Amino acid sequence: MKKNTSEFKARSLVLTAFCALALMWAPHPCFAQTSGQALDQQASAADQQIPPAVAKRLEEMSKRIEQLEAELKKHKAETQPTTVVASAKATVPIAPFAADAPISQKAAIAANQEAVPAGPAKIEPFSDADWTWLNGNPRTKDIYWDSKFFTPEIRADVNYVFDFNHPTDHSMGGSSELFRSQEVQLEQLGVGGDFHYDNVRARLMTQLGMYSATTPRNDPSPGHGQWDLVSAYRYVSEAYGGYHFNVLNGVNVDAGIFLSYIGLFSYYNFDNWAYQPSYVSSNTPWFFNGVRVQIFPTKHLKIEPWFINGWQSYASANHKPGLGGQLKWTPTGWINVISNNYGLGEDDLFTPHRERIHTDNSIEVKYFDRPDRRLDKMAFSLTGDLGCEFGGGVSCYGNHKGGPKQSFIGFMLYNRWWFDRDKFGLTLGGGKINNPGRYLVLLPPINGETAITAATNSPYFTENPGDPFKAWDSSLTFDYMPKQYITFRWEYDYRHANVPYWSGRGGITPPGGNNNFPQFFACSNGASSGQTALGPAEMACGTPGSTSGVFFPDLRRDESFIDMSILVKF
Image (cartoon, rainbow, N blue to C red; front, side, top):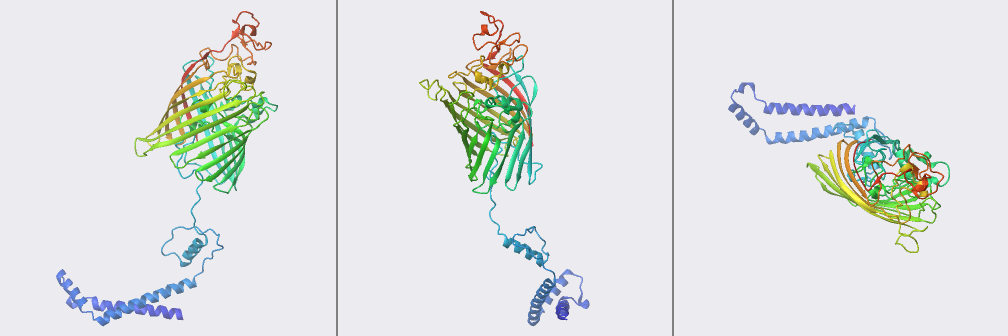
């Protein structure tokens, strides 16, 4: 009854006010005029004829109507069911709501906002800037398909090389990226991705294609012991598991095979400014097998110690593991500073007590960024490396009682230009090394030579303590990148060494194929000289005084080639 009475009073007052206003302002039919001037005069007269008492009464009635309407809305809200917030941690979607939304819905949203105070979102390390411009970083920004549990990754790398030395056996040496000429070759097919759930993490990436043969052949450690580690690890480039700890800005602990990035360039050519990197990258590790800890004290700093089997090795070549680590600092979005360091490991197979140390340092600077211009971006990268071996008959400092100098010094410099909103790229660069002792020089695969057989010292390209090796190179790279997932690349490279090193027209394969004894001279008729120890060439094939029956690889001091590639990453 109370509800009906209130509604009746409100409606009566509204009706009364309407009628009074109609009587005062509506023109009487007898005084109606057709001219606009008469109407204006009548309206003005009506305004002047409103008594002050009536105007005051109308104002009071208007206030009373607003009061009754407010009481009516309040009464309706109290009679409707109220939404209950289950707990302070309950998630209520906060979306824009209409102005006429129920009072209870607004109250529930407001209660949830008060229960869970909004704090500043935590920034993941290195995520507050666009780092796709870096040499060694992929430029993909979007992931087509992702989930809470798995982030997929697919890579394809196919190349064709035209070598101006025209090796008859199509075999190239001195590279960890290019191996065959005048052929289309699948460098790598990588399928895998990242698993992540409840702070547990893992990563798997395959290396089907040329990488599955060429990367293991540069590792001597499987020669130390049994169980054919080359076959065990051949088809994986990354395979590890670990855990993420929510301390500082994050701490990751991973164990397995992971990429090293000593030398700045990525193991994956899609990520790089050039296809064939200079010696500082090409001759240094692409992977490590062991344990790493990634510590992020701030969102711009990473400290990453390593406990690993050795220098790009599946096992330990002798008896000591390797220690090392990376420091990565990005104070702002246009500069990246990285330092990789390695030590302690005994990495020369069958040469115990010879230890290796190495430091690799890079700086990358983006010095021009104008997305609206035709030339929209420019950046450079500079890398410098120092290292040496000591003990076991060699030394770091020169020819003294410790043995011949066995060291490594090198640098590389690249500049990159981007055009038309990063659709085109142009890179000019190169570098130089000096590596007496040749312990980091990539051994040419003459007569099937591998890092394991090299431990017995090949007669074709020796690696004796103090053996000289100096080299420099240059490259010009053009990229067409119509989409972020694909790169069409054309590159010209010129490389020079102070000793015969690159494959010449005669090739590096004996007539009739490899004889399975690369530690000995091969006979030109393909027969094995396995019964003969290292010695003069005329003795290798049992023809004293003559070298006519001995195969010598055709090695040159210079190499130039054009490589063309299609690179895909999802």
